[in-house]
Image 1 (cartoon, rainbow over the protein chains, first blue to last red):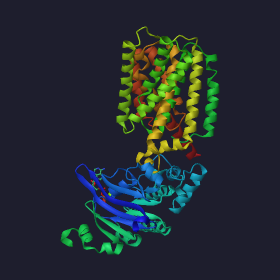
Image 2: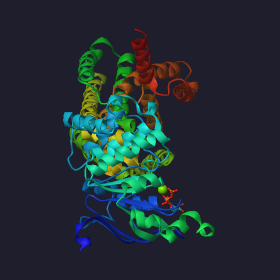
Image 3: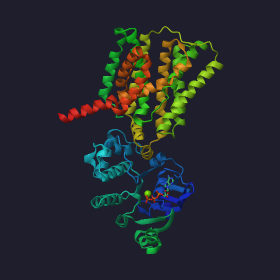
Image 4: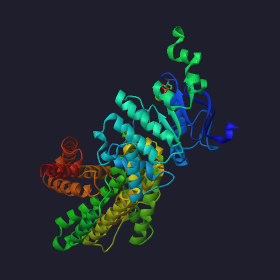
Length: 245
Length: 310
Ligand SMILES: Nc1ncnc2c1ncn2[C@@H]1O[C@H](COP(=O)(O)OP(=O)(O)OP(=O)(O)O)[C@@H](O)[C@H]1O
Ligand SMILES: [Mg+2]
């Protein structure tokens, strides 16, 4: 019955790059207002999974659906308008545009299609939410790394996504920045958003995620509550190698 | 490319109104330069509509320009058509051709796009020459009209004004914003919901339409149309150099590139005609080393530092 309430549903999804199987027969569901973590060692296929959901490439096999509608063959712009927003593992900002314009980019072509004053005001309000409104007229080249990440998050939020995909949004932050970052995502969680986050920072996963999916070499090796999954022997072995288990 | 302001539109209107008096104040040599200036202003500005924000360097201008000249020449001498109907037809053909090239090059970026557009333009030139020589008879393409250089100048001025106005409207629209986002990062553009293919093809099509219109208007100046000449790739390079010399950051950039370039070019061409290609090379070097953002970039830099000091 979980099927019916799933906002995002991934079913038997496989992705091959030539001979390399980056994602192998992955299945998981994300319910409304749920925050699901995808964890796993480097190169286990997490980003590839996110890329398939957001439409960067189509799965070789399997289906991905959003509220029951098949999206696995759709282009990224269609999937974005259907309500999937994402950030990138390596921050992607628009270099020639100001901070405000970067965020407006998210608001203008989404399902609300805001424009002019409306788009500007909305971009300001989102920037305020991530604590960046004071910088709204700065060029993006002048921003620190965490500020770039915040602007990218604001651009994604400006599209008012129904499902938010965060690919290692906390990676590369120093300890104080990390605290700010975790608090920010906590606020998103409290707003009742539906979020899928790929993450390596264990503290963040423990305090933020309701459930976790664990990947290793492209396949799902565990799924369940965060506490349960993190104490699972297979998971520990995947992270630390056989010797330490 | 930043969205154009109302102030810029007013300035453009004033400039167009003033420029309209040029044929009354000049003749012969200087009127001829005026025609060249208007022709390249229209071509470089329409090139800029697409290439400015997206940073895709197109070398296909000659293909559209040539289509305009050829359609007018062929229509008027082989089919007794009127100049005006052929002008309209060439706009349509130029637009369709550009849309097809746009669709074919969607997946190409960077240097591949540059080479492909150049190759395609050359292919079209050879194809048209071949068709002309083998099927359409070799009577030659004569374009005999009552138009004087002043008439051509005014027609080109109106065309350049229309290109500017269209660019002004686009730069303030969702479509213009979408192109700037595409120029920044195409992956991001798609992920915020932009149909990048449609946006690029629409803009490239306008470039084709205006290229063909300019080619059609200039045809009466030559009276005799030689396909190899109207499709000359030199024109494509001229358009790119002038646009970049002016600067791609602003819609009015091409104008400030076209005028100095043409003045120098004409001077060199009449005094040291063997060295004219050298000017092209030097212009390229100047842009790359001293004016990477063109005159526009330099002007805005000076303005910003003046503001900083005061
Ligand atoms: N576009 C691509 N073409 C070819 N191979 C790819 C491509 N994208 C990813 N891969 C390969 O797929 C595998 C999974 O990569 P992926 O980036 O999904 O891992 P990840 O779990 O996100 O790793 P990390 O934690 O380092 O970000 C890797 O072996 C990678 O080299
Ligand atoms: Mg990754």
